[in-house]
Image (cartoon, rainbow, N blue to C red; front, side, top):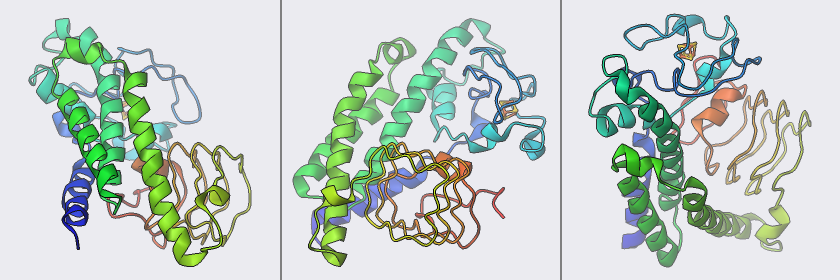
Length: 288
Ligand code: SF4
């Protein structure tokens, strides 16, 4: 194994797996900072900067064990990847907005920015865990370091970040990673075709029956798979960036080497213990 391949595994995989929310170190920011409209995922309207009425004084949720039953399914789907504790403990040095209300307005505006930085870090760290070319690896590593440095900025500097501009180079690196990895997989099982023939970006497969389908190495970026039946489908090597998987049936599906799949996507879908997931993702407790 070359030095680059070794680095992929030890750095990228380790960082990706470390991105976990620690709600006990967070000041309930996802329950306070965000604007949430009432829907089947969230039972009430909640304005940005207003604490959810279920948030307790110690920043825990008083209906934590019955969120789904009480119409707050979205709360069991959300995953900040650790952005909440970073804002609470690093950016604002452990000063919570209840005790220091003068910090609240800024803290609530910083949280969505940190959340997006963490999302990009997760994607780039995952990309580095793949056996990409050394030039791409180097570019990914520089990008990762830039994102990590950004998370250490003071609150005002974080608020000044132009997130859409930050996303542009990240997106192009992730696309390049996806192309390289999927092309190498396609060569293994269908060397007559190019990765372009596996391009289903943005496709509308809402409610479609794809039971047992072989979709290996398909690019499904930005596609709609809401309530699609993917039971026992082979989804290895599929690029899942931005795919809407709400209520998709993933029972028995193989996603063990799916790319850029997130815990939020998995939490929003239906599955069971036969569903195979990448090592950095967990089977949600609400699955059968
Ligand atoms: S219902 Fe609970 S988890 Fe959901 S926003 Fe309110 S306090 Fe947070």
